[in-house]
Length: 580
Ligand SMILES: Nc1ncnc2c1ncn2[C@@H]1O[C@H](COP(=O)(O)OP(=O)(O)OP(=O)(O)O)[C@@H](O)[C@H]1O
Image 1 (spheres, rainbow, N blue to C red):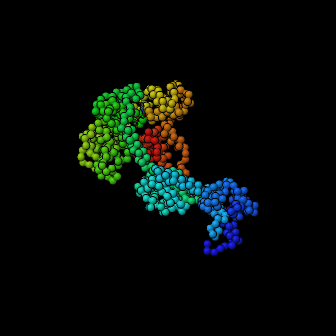
Image 2: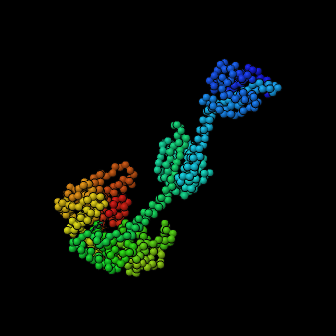
Image 3: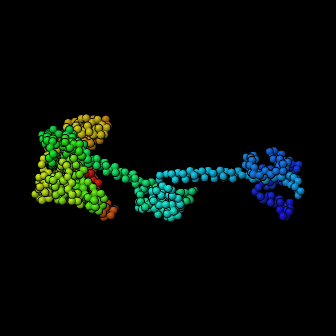
């Protein structure tokens, strides 16, 4: 130091510094003891000045420092419970002779605790970073102003957006379809879960969960977890397609599954068995719910084609513009929206097997012409194509329409009618074969007992009487529904059907009609939606009412409403009214 400082100046400095200082002379007596030293040791300067340091700090090393003349720097030690860092230095006179020693020390308990906390935080940060970087879900974090401050690698993989494209930009930047959930959460401070949306370049379908980041009650931002569901969606679409294909392409029933021993049924079954032995086209006639589809399955399974595919097509349930391409397929580029490579139709899929054309009376003239061709020439031409493709398919058609009347009206081709009507089989309505009702009840009780885990085995004569005195406009399908509901009405341990178990029968007693009947009592919907919504609700009620009045018979219902069967089918499907 270039300038001497006075003792008074030194005392001021010593007492304002945060470092504690204890000095001793050659005799070991304390001659410096500042405020900071008082704070750390708990002694007062006046108590210790002049005392031997060993009496105050027995473990002192200042004597060693004096003896060796070597400073000891940054030594950590415990003083009671206080953790301190000490520098010990010898004090020399102007000639370099040691005349004492000083210990300068500092309480580092808090600093140590803080540094431990910092280490913990850093460890936690590394852990979080590892989690954030390795999770399959995309993560985006934004600050309280809605600007992105963190995204993880999964985010880039799912959205196709790199960090530099999104960081410090508004959280809305990655949205391809939907509203920003980050912004919503920042506004409401409430977590939002399970929001479907599309994100990023690839318009990936995702489900988003976002939570606010609150420190105390201060909003610091929000964190979003983006779960990619596009692959699951694709797989589940595929699965649905395969399931519907399997449903369409397997014939489950055989003649053993057709219950009925009355003369009319025996004759129908006999004709069907004989037809099964030939490749002839079969036309199944009969009201809705009589079992025509059951017959079609049974004929296929009893024929030489039983190992081939069985493709079921409900001609009324497929929209008219696409029925032709569904049946006959299409070539590459046949129309906008077509699959690039073209597509096989149901006839090609049924090659080597049987095609069951349900509701054949509903097909339009263009499809009728193509059907005629396939029946005559055993070949089809795909929509948009010219090349005939040979197909080896047995046709079983079914209808509950009066085809003869349609032929005379000119809406159904006469030549097609004759081609289809090679082996006509009439499946009788249930009211014409009431003697089969007990057999059917027995069969259905076993079927639904198994399905519902019950043991219903009997019906009392009174309950049977109720069922025998009803005319079953919905045929076996309606009986099936009534038995299923009867079993549901029974207590778990009841095994015999009593009259009170049987639900109300009537012209509108089928389950879907029952539900619809109940709904009929609901007045026309309150005018609380758009005109379109109110009209749709009214249309639904009118359809349900017509179906109920027609006892579930769709042809009758369509006639009552003055619309075509096809148009009725569309509307039922659109309103989610059960078609079976
Ligand atoms: N003889 C029968 N024995 C056993 N179950 C039958 C019989 N007839 C019909 N069913 C059952 O009744 C329901 C309706 O039968 P199916 O679908 O074959 O009728 P459908 O005449 O083809 O009706 P739609 O014309 O409305 O298509 C099915 O669940 C079927 O299993």
